[in-house]
Structure formats: C-alpha cells, structure tokens
Image (cartoon, rainbow, N blue to C red):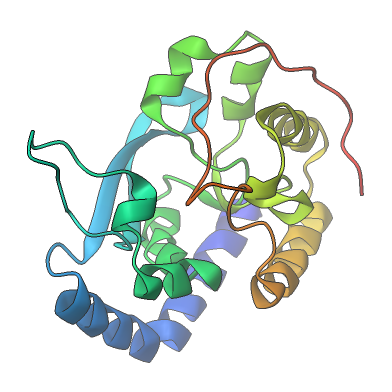
Length: 204
C-alpha cells in the first residue's frame, strides 16, 4: 500500500510541478551553471547505496589549493531561496519512482556516516529513507543529531499509513513556514561525528 501510494503521489506531483521544474532548471543554469542536478551517493534500505537527486543550490567555487570553499561561501541568495521552500527536493520524486526512497521515511544521510553508527542507530535503515520524515516535521536541521536519531528510530518502530499522511500534511505546513532549514550559525547543518546518541521515544 505504501509503495502504491508513493508511486501515485510522485507521478501526480511531477505532473503538477513540471512548469516549476523547467523554470528552476533554467534559473540554475543561468545563475549557477552546470550541472543543474546535484547527484550524491546515499545509503538506502538496509544501507544499500543509491544516487540521490537534488537541484543544485551552491556554486563550485574553490580556493587556490583547489578545495571547495565552505558551504556558506558557496550558497547564494538564489540557492537559499530554493532551500527555504524545499524546491531543491523536487527531483527526489524520481528517486521515489525508482524505488530508492519513499515519500516519508528517515532522511538519507551520507555514506561516510555508516561506519559511525551504533547498532541501534543503524536501525534507521530498516525502512526506506524518505523525502520528508518524522524528524523533519519535528525540527528538521534545527535539532541535534541525538534528537534526529531518536525521532527516526521512533518512526521505524511506529510507522503506519496514517502516520505518513500526518507527516506529509505537517511537511506542507513546515515548508510554508520555512522552519528548521538550517542549524543556528550554520549555512546547512553540522556533520555527524559518530558520538553515541541517546535513543528516546517519539513525540507527537
């Protein structure tokens, strides 16, 4: 039922957002150049890697040593706008159609984090990752890694079709309010450093 729902909604949203997709792609090409789509390997169900798609929001500026500049130096006002309204996430509907992710689930993090997880933390991969999730509607990037893992693990244990519907409705509300986009003092979010996290129950 979840997979069928994902496919139906993903195709409907792609059709609805098609004009928006074209406009965003043209603007990215004009303001940031190529590539238009940012592609990065992420861990999916049971940690199996896949390539996640997002609209590009940063420049490719590097220092004299050829190393990319920090995120806050490469994130333009245009990129901030795209992120503010989660427009950069639209290409992930293709990931949903291909079965890499679901509409709702723990957000797919970086491959390099996998060796840093505890056994308990790795359980977040017992379900497909999602475009949005329980942690995203309960703080997103404004909460700590400990809180994110607790919320993700609560979802893995308690997920249901009705909970997914609730998360999707709350996601729309959060997007319009532009809540929790960044951590305080950060252009995006701090990297996970592998510290043990305290796992607690979810909250409604």
